[in-house]
Image (tube, rainbow, N blue to C red; front, side, top):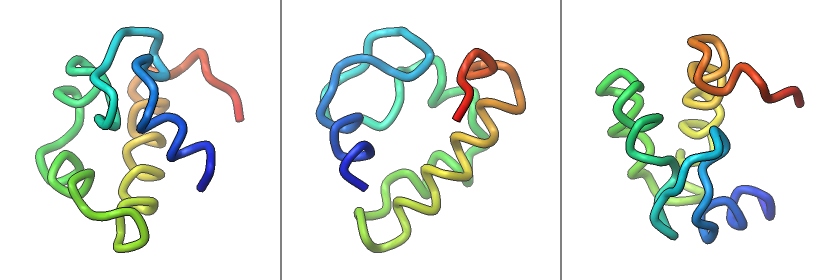
Length: 71
């Protein structure tokens, strides 16, 4: 959870591109998600956001935007 909050506060997307502080992803990564996944990233932390972020991360890795990341 702490890493997730640091990412939200930061200005670098996990793909390496710039993002606004307080945003989950850069514009390019966000737009590459299905609409439903995008909507779920507006849920509050502790109220579904963590799960939505995990699904979005899996999607971005699977589709190649975050293929360079290994966890």
